[in-house]
Length: 568
Image (cartoon, rainbow, N blue to C red; front, side, top):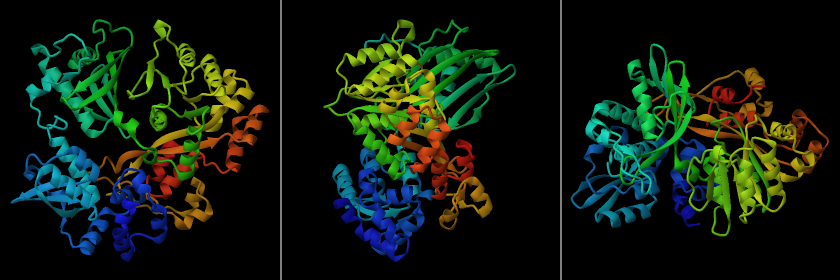
C-alpha cells in the first residue's frame, strides 16, 4: 500500500536505533491507514513509543531541524495560514513566514503530500520542521482554540460572553434570554460551560446545600470541584439554566428534563442534556455534554482487543440476531452502539432506533425519542418499526419483558437488533433476561454476542513512570505466572498536559459469542457462574482479564483496573 510504502524509510531509521522491533513492524501492517491516523500517531498512541525519541532519531536520520513546541509562542503564527481540516488531517502546524517561505511543523518527515496541500492552500512555499508528536498535537489544539473562526471561545470578553446563547430551532421565534438585570449570571454560566468544554468534561453538576453551593465537572469519569459560587445565587443559577434549556422556571417541585444547543459561532455548537432535581436546599442541575464526534469514532480507537473486535464485526455482518451491550451508566455503551450503527449505516439499509433520550443525531438513521406520557414507549416504537420494513433496529435499553419479547421476535424474523441492559457481566445478562420471563429457547436462539464493558482512565504517555510490584502481589491480582516476565506496569505522575497523570479513557471489554455449548447451558437453566465458567473454557477474557491486559501494555494502571473491575 502507498501509505505503508512511504513509511518504510521511517521504519528503517527507527529499527536501526532499536526503537521498533521486527515483531512490531509485522504487526503494524496497514493498521494505521485503516485507523485514519498518521504513521507516527499510530506508533505513539497505539504502541506507547516515546515521541521525543522518535522525533530526535528522525531529525538526525532525515536532516530536518527539530523544534521544541513547549516553548513556542503561538501568537507569532501569521494570520491566514490556519486550515483546521489540513492541520487535523496531517497533524501539521504552520509556524512562521520568512519571505515567501512558510515553515511547517510535522512529526512525519515523509508526509510530503501535507506540504504540497498546505502550499496550495496558502500560496506560500513550504519547508518542514520536525516536532514531537505529542507536543505538536497539544500545540495544534491550543492554536485552534485560540482561533476565533474555529471555536470562537478564546478571547471572548464579558459582552460577548453575555451574547452566547442557545441555537434556535428552525422557525423558532427570537427570544431574549440575556436581560441586563441577569447579565452577571449569564456571563458566569457561559464561562462555566465554556470551561467545561475546554477541559473535556462529560458532565456538569450544579449542587445547592444549606450553607454552600458547588459546581463539579466529571472529567475522565471522575468528579472534581471547580467552583463555589455564593449560596445566595443558587436560585438564579438554576433559573438561568432552566431558561436556556426551555424548562418551566416556575415549577420547582418536580424533576424536569431539557436540552441546550449552545451556539459559540456560526461554525461551532455543543449539545447539552439537562436534568433538574428538587433537593432539600434548592434544585440540583446536572448537564451532560453530548459530543457528536464520539459517535464517529472508528472501532479501532475504542480499545477492543483484536479477537474482540473481530467477534463484534462478525456479529454486525450477520443479517439477523441480537447484539447486547451491558454495563453501568457511563461505561460507554452508547458509543459502542453508535460505532456499530455507523459501520452499518449505508444507503442500502433501513436503520431505526428507539432511544430515551436521543443523545446524538446520526445522519441517515431514523431516530425516535421515547415519550411515555404520550404513549410512545419502547414496545410501541418497536411495533411500529416492524411495520416500516427495517433492516436494523436499535433499542436504547431493554427494561421490561414486553420490550425484550418484541426485540427477540425481531431478531428471530430477519432483523439485526442492537440494545443495552444494565448488568455487570455478559453471563449475568443472560440470567437477567431469563429472570424477566423470556423463555430460555428464545434467549439461546436469538442472541449473537454480548459485550460487557467499562471505561478506565488512560495513563498520560508523557509523564507515566514504571511501577515495581512484587510478583506474589501480581499473582494475587490475577496475572498468570507466564505473564510476569513480560509485563511493564506503570503508574500516574501528573504534568501540565494531563489531569493527575491521566488523559482520556480506554474501553475494557468482555465480548462473548453464544456458542452451541453455551446455548445448551441456557436451555438447561444454568446459572451465571456456570455460563461464565464455560466462556472461560472457550477462551473469552472476562472484564478483569481484559483490564489486566491493558495494564500490562502500559495503557492504564493496576489501580485504575481495580477501580473499574472486580479484583476477585
